[in-house]
Figure 1 (cartoon, rainbow, N blue to C red):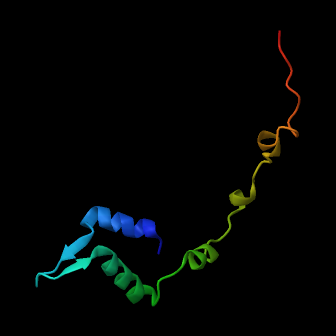
Figure 2 (figure 1 turned 180 degrees about the vertical axis):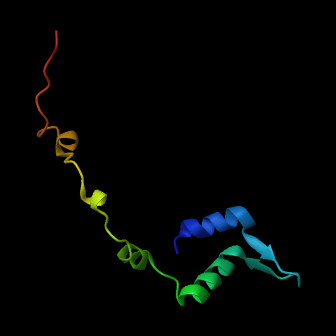
Figure 3 (figure 1 turned 90 degrees about the vertical axis):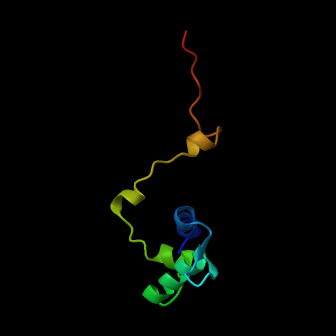
Length: 80
């Protein structure tokens, strides 16, 4: 689970939660426990990235070398 998910949970619920017993626990810990119970482990970014299924539109890119490397760009013509 990415840090952004934990950050969002902290934005919604605050950095800590206070139990009815008065004990204060980190919101992130609750999120991690929830993920462990659902998945059995905390997935890494590599785990998450391996699970992405490539879609056809993801491979349709245009070459940007000319924009990045001025030596490959077409000569600039002055319009008068």
